[in-house]
Amino acid sequence: MALSVIEKKHLTDFVNRLIATQPAVIGPVRKGSKLVFGPLSQAQDLVLDYVTTILPPKKYLLPPQETLIRFKLGPSLELEPVIENTPRIILGVHPCDLRGIWSLDQAFGDDTVDTHYTARRRATTLIGVDCHPDESCFCTSVGSQRPEAGTFDLFLTDVGSAYVVEIGSERGRQLLERYAQTREATANDLALQQRFWREKEAAMQAHLNGDVHLLPLLLDSQRQSDTWKELGNKCLSCGNCNLVCPTCYCFDVGDLMQLNLTDGERVRQWDGCTLTDFAVVAGGHNFRRQTESRVRHRYYRKFQYLMLRYGKPFCTGCGRCTRSCLVHINPPDTLNALIAASEKEEA
Image 1 (cartoon, rainbow, N blue to C red):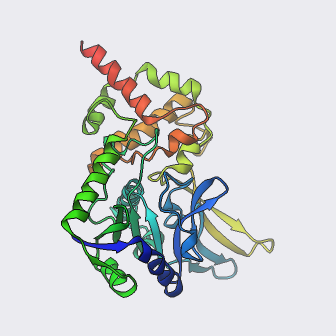
Image 2: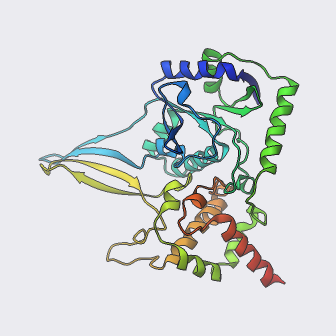
Image 3: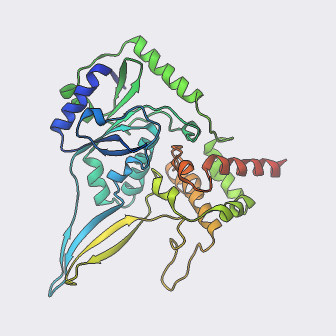
């Protein structure tokens, strides 16, 4: 993988050139005491030394609400597909969120390609940055602590007075050559990069007490575990965990009509499997009426169903669900309880 170096004193010029020449540049910016991904008007607004944002950058690839089709009723139905493909650069994406976007790529580009997601994804350039974990992060347990090949265009690692830049695509290479002042990476730069990664992994506080790749088998044996009943009694079914998750992609579709009852839009918006009415079907039957079944389903989606299909957990270890849960339900505690129960049964 090709490596270059940008001195920190030159990074501002690089970002400002991108802002001046590209249709849209997105990055982590402050919103009160929190960080969010938002449009950049100047390089000084960009925050790269951060733990996490409220929502992942998936909101620019799969918006919370989007129009799929505009239509007009009449003697003949008029339909106009709405495909949004404005070129954009998203800066400052952590490795866990790059894994989240990889997960969405699989979900929306596998058997049936989603035209709307794919158009945005192809128009998006991803510039990642390495991060420092807090007590909620557990990316080392799910293998997303480092950027994976094919998930980024450029990736920056802080090595003190400079950033080591990994070039992940031809698009990234062209941006770097056109807009950035760089130098070749030295052996010392690479040693500092390796030290950053070692220190990051050593700082991780939350862990799974087992191999993540064995979780599909574990979950097979723990479907009736008392852990699910305990979580069902705690869960508020608020959907916070769904909203902040980088890999949740469930949605609902409905039609919005104008007052003239002629013009309308077909709209897609986020939905969540922990919400009470998520599994309601025609006739009013609810396949997951009990809270415990919805919580269990969420974990099986992350660590069994999709993991068996795509080879990686659909949890990135970002810790957002841990931070947002009002009753402190979180993946490490839940999975470790199941692991402990399984080990007790085997003993």
